[in-house]
Image (cartoon, rainbow, N blue to C red):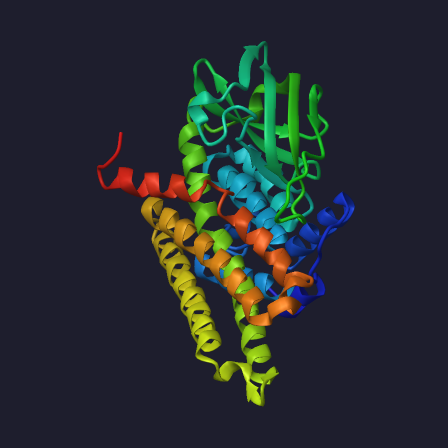
Length: 358
């Protein structure tokens, strides 16, 4: 991938759906969706370590957690489920378009009443003839309404299964909204399924495997979205250091004040710790090891660290920090505590893996 291309994507705050789609396509053209994907499907055939390197660069150059969120929803919500569970024809027909950025994808899990509780999912699928009929509503789905293809999870014969749904399928509507604050450049919306008819070859993987697929997708998303966020945090650190060195207060540089220098030292420790956790997840994935605990720990630590560093950046800049990017990143960081499962969910996962909790 040519890293000089990424700065041309540029930062953005608020944008049209057309602009959101254009910027995601630029990520595809820059090769950001090709990492850790076999060459036969249009990928680079390289490692998760390489993915992390380039995604951190994306975060640093764009300073846009919304774009980072959208790119990761595309990769872990659509590309990797297809790569790991798709039939040969599904992988051949769909993966090259997704990894190139020609198509935009994602996954639809959350529902208005279910939240993080997948067992409370109400979306349903019924077999009819040579296909399935889907009904239900999904909410807060990243990359809606710009997606071409979404992996939609619904209950079929009492168990959760995954289905490939296109934006122009009969009986489906990809809606723009509701609008949320934080990560505003990631489009988000509802999916309404009203007797949506899809052919039988759009079942992804085996029937009833949806829960396994959801857990694997979220494990990857929780870990690697923070490679991009680490880039944003590095930019915040660089900005804070530069400002503290040059800002004069009573004849001394702001950096001479211990209250400021200690905040900045903590920012440095946080971003380096995030990198270590992300690198551990990448190493495990490159060795085909599960990252259940590691990704939960990464998500928990990194999301809290991003919020703390965003608040510290505003504090270092003072009133000037309430202008533009720095304060906007506080909202983005607050959203980061919620996407891909809240901090409390990550604690539950770790506790459960240690044999605690119900």
